[in-house]
Length: 400
Ligand SMILES: [Zn+2]
Image (tube, rainbow, N blue to C red; front, side, top):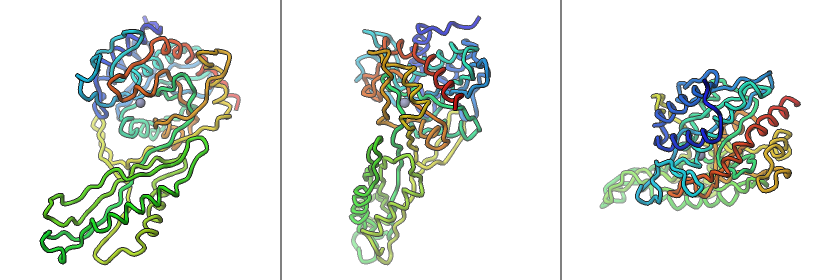
């Protein structure tokens, strides 16, 4: 017999998940446990894909557009365990809160979503999919590959903490590198070298020039760019370096892509450094990183996580806000706003154009801290709102 999709069982499942650590690239045990729970809940077509994402489906009554509910399987590192008042992998419920790493980012919501999907089996007008992805905390490789594999739901709900609001977007993030090259030499004989550090001031000036000219979105705010690190190679203090890499942390708007970012930085450089002196080179490129999933998939990817923004008056958004309501005033529609942080919605909506919104319990201020916790009463309320939310989204999509 299938396990009952009750809030109490979902909370116990969340506690179990917190007890299984799983940094990005090491989510295998968490994935195994999620798959086991999906099977116990009798979801259809439960599977783990080649990337390591876990997927299960509650088949609907008809063929209304499907809705996909998503959380991520990975968590950020716990840091010094002694700095936690309650041990990071305890998963205990105490003083009305579920505690531990992942409690609100995002294993609590993952459990709620999975149970909410199971509760809709055979009841929704279309399929409801639970798909929990890997590597979100490293830029969302899991979601990117899930969508590249061809899965195309009618809409997506991201479970990142909204404190019960309906979230409709966020800025994205990119890392851009400016590489200054010169000629290395012995520090005792500067005449024989081209010191790459000589152009560092111009590159930093160009970064400020760039930052001052970035566009602003009325809802998401301003795009920002700031130099956050300088790598000098070789790093010996008695060698004149032939390479300096300046890295920019760039918070981007939904329409920005790699080419737009690189061109903006090149334009700023041309203003601050119109001619590159003989013997030097200056190159602008996206920072890249080799990533490996726990299933062994290796990908070299640019450090680029897209942003997205849904129209606040999109019929699916207004239907969702009405269906969720406000916890303190149930007849009023939920507050609609952007997130301040980035999510996998950048991939689903920003890149793949799938209508996406965020809904989940949890306070952002606890994320990535050693006080991470989820309010159990708020979680129970949010769990009860998932059914109406998904049905309203499917009806709004079917009516289009
Ligand atoms: Zn998260």
